Image (cartoon, rainbow, N blue to C red; front, side, top):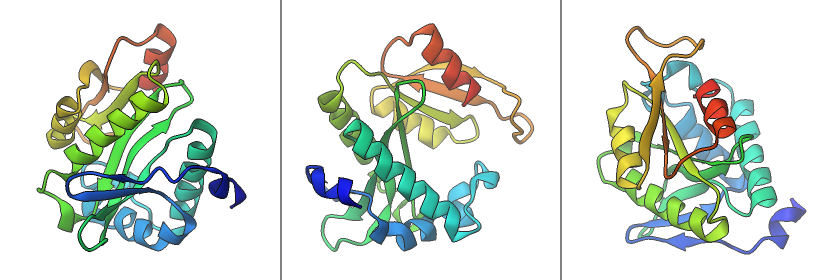
Length: 191
């Protein structure tokens, strides 16, 4: 993909992680995480059951980075470069960054999600300081809500949408600042 050659590297190192722009070479590793049912325990319908879903995801994230100057990263261990998952921010149709991550179960419980989220918030502030950073989670995933809070986001909406969820589960929208009425409406509709 020629546009990747025209982009600056954007490799980021945190205390324990190496964050690099996703490339087609990451598809098999990404599929390993996104097809693992354990990584979708809070939203089983999101699981990638065919590789084509992962190919599409990676291509969209690469294209988003090319258009907006920032996007999700391949997340690796800084020491041995083992693939741990995907994380970062991606631009939404509402013109806000969406903060997200999906890590291999072997990487859970180490604080990596918070490390990724803080790096993503910092990078988003550098690339587009006037653009809100948002995150969307389900109430059956309090650990992800805690990550958003540690990254500096606050809960701005909680409720139900027409999308099917397990009984008693609601959707949440988090943001690092006030949202316009249009941004908020889009986020709620797509929570």
